[in-house]
Length: 300
Image (cartoon, rainbow, N blue to C red; front, side, top):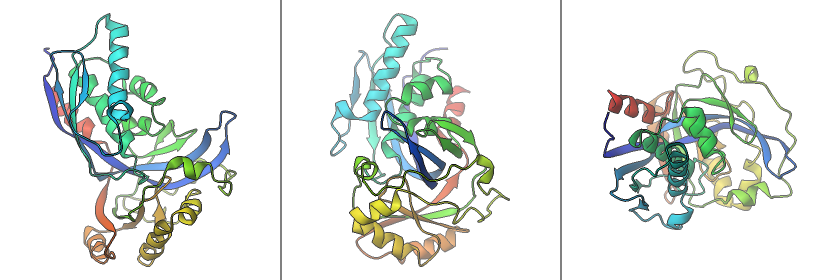
């Protein structure tokens, strides 16, 4: 099989934390978490082209993110180095263009999702042959959310977010509000009033029920939400407004806030009422990462 020359229109979907508990802290300072991650059908799009040389080049500007610090570039370089270690030579370089839709500091995992999509794409383009587990191990030092996006389905997460078990997720529509602020993760995790001792649960505690069941709504909480709402008042305002239409919750360390609805029509009705000054959109829950389907098609 010859090596493919390009892979365009590669999806990098957002994730929501249906709940997020901080259960402790490791000696190295990393927080121990429990969460359920769910993919949604709204995100960034990436385009990859092989180069004649071995350089990794980001061909689009990402405001506020220098190329050398971009998780996509770092992930591609890490995989390129692993390829060289295994094969004794460098693979071709890659030009990568990123169409950004997900906000930075939104708690949607945008940078990590982009990096995971880059790892999947390059693994295919280079025919590197790494398994999902090997890609997850390669991505974890770059970002704790990267393994989830490579895992590619609704997951019960523990540890720092890298210990994943598949779980049945709700088949629902979400309204997501971007309240217009970027929340730095470090500001939340270093706050003195952050709750760090929530009692651990088991995967069996998460309500699953039938497809589309709303039993999980109201389950648990986001331990980071109160801190983010205190430090960033627009987050509190978004939670308050969206909470008038259902059980609203912040995702990740913020700033985005979401609420689940049983139908697209209901979600659209609420989205249209979002106050001016906030960006809002609707998205459906995804049972599987669309990049995996795309790669299967390309391998036929």
